[in-house]
Length: 252
Image (cartoon, rainbow, N blue to C red; front, side, top):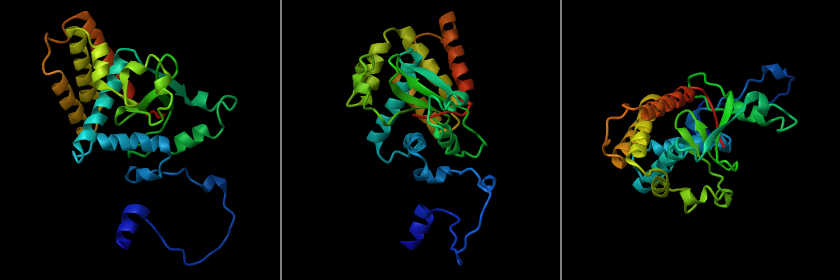
């Protein structure tokens, strides 16, 4: 039990102090906290939510029902964004450091606790998925592109969002029925998912999951994609999102 606590709960690099003492130190000598993804439970809630969702999606099938629900809600975020039901609202660092509008410690808390993924990434903006009414549904996070918010108390009060909900979760079945009406829409969104999986997702497990979901939901295209102007615009928009996904961003 002692080994389990030391290795899995307390973490690495624990030392024992043999003496007590007090001395003055310079503020400039205090470095920014580094949050290792190995210990996601130490993150502030916003980052823990994003990280936990990515781990849930890449899990090895320990609970198939939970995994399927998470995958469907993930795909629903892409669907709602693709058809304009929700849109990305970007809050720049400059905006969030405006102390007349936001708490003076907000940006420091968000940027200082941004998870270190080992690629020297830093937070430069927040990108929130919002409805036209301003209801936050999810946000951008590099590993999963989108992830859903845990705080959902306002979802049911948003009339435009209500049709896409079931049991306070985003419903893939309802959203698909409402938004995908034609074969062209079906094939365009299918291509969009494929482009996201191929070019935006760097995690192999997540890429495989999205590709498998797309193949299951949309077994085959009814026409050759990329052959008309509308589909080319879809592909262009998808690639633009891929380029955007290489920038560090945010939470809710």
